[in-house]
Image 1 (tube, one colour):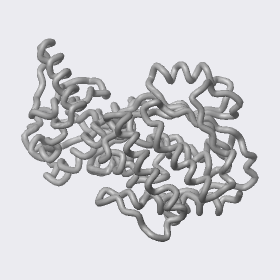
Image 2 (cartoon, rainbow, N blue to C red; image 1 turned 180 degrees about the vertical axis):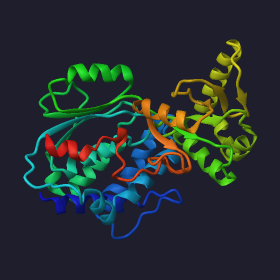
Image 3 (tube, rainbow, N blue to C red; image 1 turned 120 degrees about the horizontal axis):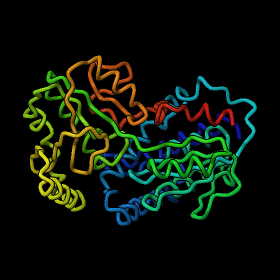
Length: 352
């Protein structure tokens, strides 16, 4: 199977996923093997939602929709054009996936396959329904993928390299356990936003998407704000109000109530608006329904801080603050070439 065949297969997968859009789920004509897979995938979405309450149908469809927009011929060719795929000797690459948001390990999965390697997938128990079904669809689109994709719930064995994602604690275990294998080990990261007080209402509304999408469970979700001294949160609270229905969702509401009780009993100072708490804290990882903030006095000092602590940060959302910044509202719209932790997965896979 050559590179062109692999690209074409992922393009067809993109067409299949495009039927599951935020606007509506609609069976389209000219989608290969649709009679076999369309209704089945609708059922897998239902199972995923029933299995994990954080995986609402809305969030699952949002994730699927994002991938459908990336898996087209122009995006894929733009992604791979700078690499040399010649003379690849297929290896077996193990992937240990997180399960915090739907299809969170999908980029690693397609990266391994697009480079011509075999993939051995160990999924999180929180996200186990969607990817195996899409893998089966790929095998129907391109039969040469058969025997190149394996899922396991057992101990990983007989692999040549590994990509593993987990918490800081599990990362230490991964680093020890896989010390003799080529590896990418990802630890816990969070995203931040730098505000100046001059943001428009539209920018702050867009920022609310970065905060609340997937309930804030993703590493690309903004969990902390850096604000000037004496920053007035009034405009911020007004702009994020469009997300207030989130408090009607049971799992989020339970976390809101629990964390609010903890803060009140601990006599922590905080601001809250009925669906989000804002607390001054130097940490990056805030609990669900909570957003941390920290004051800054100098742009130069803050830039130095963010650079020094870059291993804790996935995205910086701002407007004209740093070169690598993400625009307000765009953290959950990464391109294929936006690699987690700024580690080029394709480059890694081409040299193992």
